Length: 549
Image (cartoon, rainbow, N blue to C red; front, side):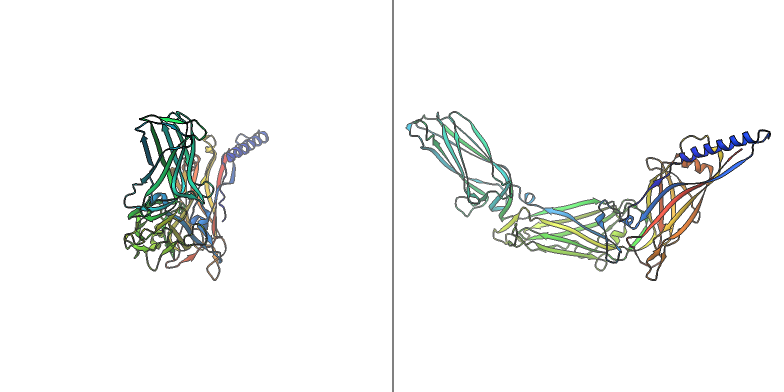
């Protein structure tokens, strides 16, 4: 991609030069013609560059990411875009709330001389997650914690054992064993994910029966210190154990995920057409694919409700007309098989939009400043068809991609490109203005586009507010010279003269920016291919006459 070069020549150097030139003229006239009573009149014509810019084919579509423009094998330009519009991840589909399990046991009768290493209390719990209609039977933890807290009024040191039944990380069971000194409140957190591969403990959620759901089975024992003295328990002593499952994010889940709708609607601002100020453009062809990847092991339904191109400068919005609008598409569940981790083969569905089946070209021809979309996903629209065998991996989400290709073959009417450059025509000192009797601006143009162009210049302040325009009477930049295939083989050269009054010169001295705009129009009914090396180079020069004497 060719980069644009901007050049601004500070006109203060011109006034410095003019002052010096006038001084020399006056000095020599006075010293060499002392006997003459009238100082001779001196005139000078001077040419000085003011601004320069190059508008290339890249400027037709300008984006901070240069990959938006692609050069084909024939050196023609294509607008190519591929981007993610939506992702449904596991922590959005399933929100596992923090859960607290508390067990408290009271000894109603005294027990004396309990030998060291004796189990004084054992218990189990069936803690059920409240997940509504969602029925999970298995989870692999990607991230999360178990926080265990224990206190006892028994006057002795004890061993606490806590276990999540049938939970394993590889072959390691989820068991916690801690020594708790006498009269100590114990509290500690344990990470149950795996920072290495994000595959932590696999925990069954079927409860003690093995056929339930959303239920964690735990067991705990309190044992007297095997190395301690015999223990005496008095009536009313208590043992309290509290376990909290915190910030659990699944790596994998299995079960029935219930039903629900997930909405995606957004407006994407785009500066892709930031250099295009106005006019109309007719796109020869465009091909867009909306690619939907269902990495979820559950049936889904996709509904595209709307897709809109918005031009906020003209106030015009164009909505997509396509058979898929408001006609839901069924998405088959992903297959639980694959050569790599995660072992999933997603279901992929593509919706093609082209000029033959939609008005997608009109959306692009609207020269949008933003694009809005609205679609939704319905989960398990036909109920529990999998009989509790839905599955989801963290790294296999549901995604929607937009892939677009539009060869830049266009038909244009008053299609305008512009660039704004720094500009300086001297400083606020007006002492030399009386020496300027007339002035012209000359716009030199080397046009490498196959179409003629009409230029326009605008004087602006530092806030980009237009102060004035420079009238270009019947100024046309000739089209580039083309070969038999209508491809430009050499640039045309044009010179456009712009008369400038003293009032305009004053405005030019106030300006700090200049917007250079060119408007293109193709012959009626004709499409022109745009090649990557097409560009128009513009150079503005001041041609002024100064006098003294």
